Image (cartoon, rainbow, N blue to C red; front, side, top):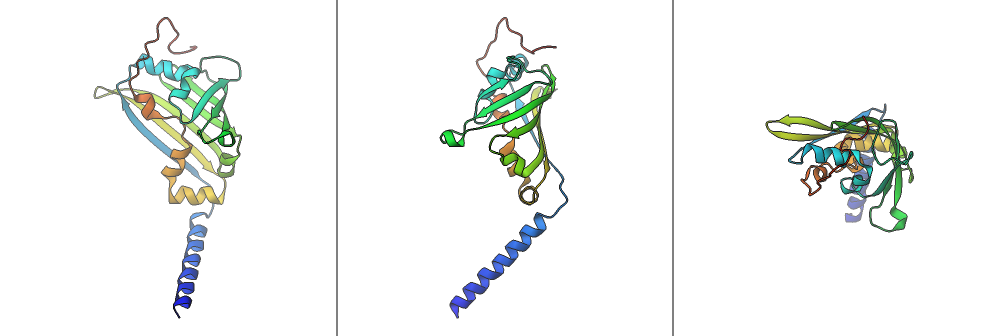
Length: 199
């Protein structure tokens, strides 16, 4: 009798789980958004340097080993294609690349990326598009703000399910710029360098 009760409970849980999956993963697809605002005491010229100079990106991107622009430039600019070499530090098999386009770059103000593909194919299994944007806003009550924005268009049942069940967790895992690290004051004091990139 006890075994039958356990089987009945297990079956009921399975049916409920399937029903929940079916309900949360139903169509149509839609756009998920994620926003984060981080105050900073970082000097504006240092923020501009960290954002515009590609060699500095590994210091404030999650798991980024290095970044390369396809034209060989060291400075970010609109239209540039970029390869992000990602290393989660879990062995060579876990390394991957993200290819993106810089869709917007306003010196000292904003940079935006359109993710084109990812070498493991995981992003493509979830979304048909993924975009990141980082803005440096003017001081508010004496505080400079770094604002991150992410948009993703779902394209699978799994993405729709996760997008309804845990949207912030899902998008946070795919937002590789680390705004908290970027906001931390550094000892960087660039001298005689272009702080904002090409005009």
